[in-house]
Length: 304
Ligand code: PAF
Image (cartoon, rainbow, N blue to C red; front, side, top):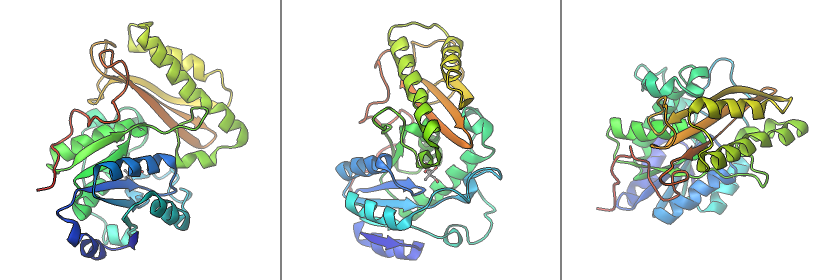
């Protein structure tokens, strides 16, 4: 595995792989099994895998955890190498933003001001800007994003489509701890008792899934109220939001069973903010399957 830190080095390393299928796994580091599952999928589907590690200041608000976001490049290097990543791209802030950018990417409020975007001012503009830059620098054929960040995944697919990146955005299933907690770099912040109570997120969502399969609810409000009740049983949990929307367009919906829906929530434990979600469609009965690209995906670019 090669570690590269500049666009110039990246061009040099990738020059001999332009006829291969290049898979890209964007991350902010502090790797866990969730990231490694993206690599695994990329390795299955591509000839050559590039992972980026870049904690992107543009997507953090002034009161968020940019400074204390966990970092451990040495450990990440070993994990990425063992997982079979070919190139680990770790640019500096100066390399990514040599000057304050005067041109950035803006995501429509209809998909960026719901769910997490309601509480994270310009977060998705920051994500879209850095991912557009990484797409341009790496020029992958396929890019892998976790379904745990379902809003980000939907926005990335829309970004690829609307800005005509010839890149397939590939959704990857959420990886969970044995008790159901979705893996996240931020889980390390949780204190022992918070960690115990955090299982309420996945437990509740799994009850929602069973309820939907049994057609227990008729409106999003009924689901949202059920989730509010459940989360309130844990004294350390503070619900930030629960929303049930159509997916991937992230619009309010009155019906639950004639389209794919997303049930997503964010919960604080102390200062630590956790998110989780499920995707449900009555037809397919469950979430986006492991092998599907989501509907708004732009065309694949295969070996020429
Ligand atoms: O999901 C993340 O880790 C980040 O938002 C991403 C996609 C790497 C962009 O900085």
